[in-house]
Structures are given as structure tokens and as C-alpha cells.
Image 1 (cartoon, one colour):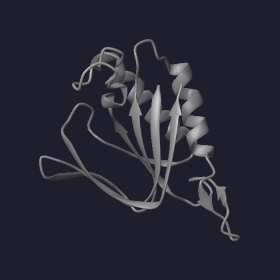
Image 2 (cartoon, helix red, strand yellow):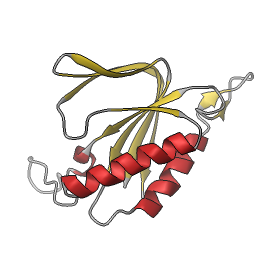
Image 3 (spheres, one colour):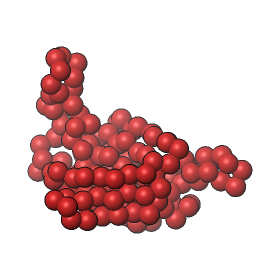
Length: 145
């Protein structure tokens, strides 16, 4: 399981020109599932991300979580996180989970984020999404489990 987590000021997500999701500030999580990933790992990752302290406190130190600052999470499924470019120039996605299974893990992961007490907005699994993101920092953390 991989997650690329970025601190943002604002995110909007559209599909075919239609606004699907929007958050005012918080985190965008690009989420990928590899073959064999399970719900237990999704539980662990959801807990880690909601407690990740990358927002500044009153002293300017990264010491607050998305929960602490009242931010929201935009969670976007992204199988391309498992693109292998070690041979040639065209990525291979053989380590990415098949869509039916990956979709179940993605939905479960989003529910676990919500259960941690954070407002969560989603993309559309498998869709061609257009994402406008105002990065904050930029701050990017990568979980590769």
C-alpha cells in the first residue's frame, strides 16, 4: 500500500467538467493498493495519516495533525503509484491490485479515515479525474507499506 500525502490550502476534483469533491484545506492523499494488500493494513495507514503532525503550531513547528487543525482529507485512488519503470520507458502496473479488489480497499480506507474523526471527500475510482490543488509548503510525505 502506498500513500502520497500532501498538505494543501484547497483542492477541487472534477470528472467530465463536473465538480465531484472539494476541500477548503487539509490533506490530499493519493492512495494505491498493491496485490495482496488487506484491510488490516488500510486500518493502520488511516490511523497514521490522521495523526500525522505536519501542520504548524503557534511556534511555527510542524506539530499538529489534520484533526488538530480541523482540516479535511481528499482521498484519490491512484494505481499509477505502482508503476514500475525499472525496465524501459513504459510503466508496468503488474504489482497494482486488480480494480475490483483495489476499489474495495480504497472505499474501506476512506471509511477508516472518517472513523478517525476527519471529514473525507473522495474522487471517483477509475475515472479520469482533474485535480486542482494549492500545495501548502509544499509538504509531501510518502508512506510505502
